[in-house]
View 1 (cartoon, rainbow, N blue to C red):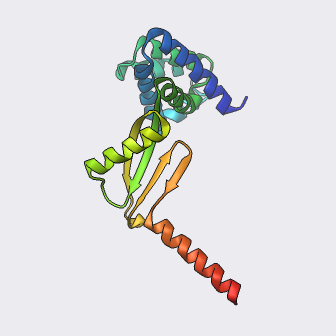
View 2 (spheres, helix red, strand yellow):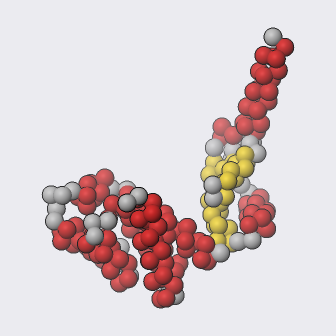
View 3 (cartoon, rainbow, N blue to C red):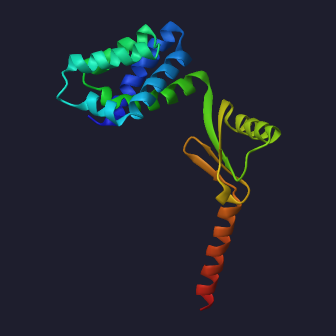
Length: 185
């Protein structure tokens, strides 16, 4: 089975549970949290994927981790199910798929704005408002800085990238000049 479709199926199932419990945002955050912990620890990933450990031992590791993180009963049950079915290795993909489903369900969109220097609060508010008008959704804005941009912004909304950076404009000008030189050569 393809990992993406497997992750999507588990994420959809978890979303259905979360909707029934009216805990969509909370469960989504919990799954992201535990996936981040697992993804951030190569040792933990190795232990959870290793055939040296029995399924019951891997299940116990996840149960202990979930308890330490203060996760809900529903998420603990979900993690136990993943361990029983030997699908813990799909947790990062499930979390990613679930985040997208939760955002869609709650009418949200995630956007990343990269600028050469930190944005002023009024600039950030204008950008957020513009994206909300364009998408018709609440915007969860992530800010990044990259001095190599020189100026301008790169905005990513989902898979769509709007590059208004000075750096990319200079690169486009360079390519145009080089093409013109080749044309006249």
